[in-house]
Image 1 (cartoon, helix red, strand yellow):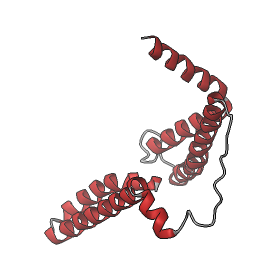
Image 2 (cartoon, helix red, strand yellow):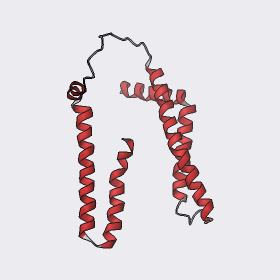
Image 3 (cartoon, rainbow, N blue to C red):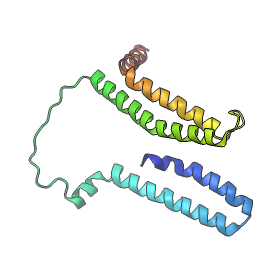
Length: 156
């Protein structure tokens, strides 16, 4: 679902390439597919976010369970630390393979770094990989920064 964010930029890139062919049928097809994709995403968003009770009733997700109250006494800093580590890990795991792929492409082409079309992606994925690593390893400092910022905002 996170990859759905890339649909609209891909549409604009596709429309530019279709626009160079100057065929209205191709452009109409791409526009119709974009509208269909956005419609599906809006439908899924409506269903999973705003109509959860209907979805639970239709799938019978509340049947066969005893009501048990589960109390969790977890501090906010622990939740923020785990969240920071998970987000950093996701960034790291997502960017490291792309960094390796783009670096491999760069060495295969043998271009000068400033002239290579992959150089921008290499820098992007390198920075993303480093940020993910730093988020994982320095999660305590990130949580302390968040606490300081919220304390500053609450004082104002």
